[in-house]
Length: 208
Length: 90
Image (cartoon, rainbow over all chains, first blue to last red; front, side):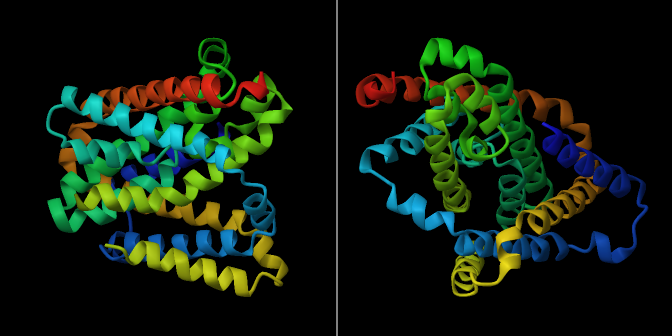
């Protein structure tokens, strides 16, 4: 929760500085977000590649466990697909690209903005990126607040699937507290796999 | 369009090859700082754009609808696999 507040604070601070035109030209240059995005993706790759737990996690995978992230993927895309008919001005694939963040608000919003800018222009792309940011932050908040309810009505795996990528970090403490320690491994495994899938799904839906 | 994935995969390969270096086990701090900086820069671009600022309320409603639909369908899918395949967890 504290983490997402800081994220929002930086975003809002940026909005104000951009609005009031306070910054030197280098910070408003059009190439900057893309350059920083590449730096970020390289670091994400580095940390996954160097992770010693990765091997243990990969070795412990039973085919059955893959059903868990699969359920999240199928559920999320079904939801995004259905709701897209009630949202005016956004295409089905745009809505699904927003859903494909699986709660990873920072990465998905940036990716969407960057990938969509050459296709639909900076304004619409910025809008869609902002939408992805808000939507995926909300997903994390629903999980933080709704875990007891999800557990009661949808069973022990529901909070994990609701959390999406955040089931491995931000929402893990809440999930463990309500669903029990035996869920910890599943929850982390689910988050790591989804984490890895975000760039693929977001790029896919942005190009359709 | 797939440059992003290519960059991530090259990071992955580099990380695997250089995994002996201790600083690579502590990437969360630098990653978080980069994310904060990136969101700030994104905010700057959104803030420069009067049209997006005018549209924030509408975006909020859309964000609520999309996230609610995605979360709800995910927990329904979770209920389904829990009942069918994960009975041992009960």
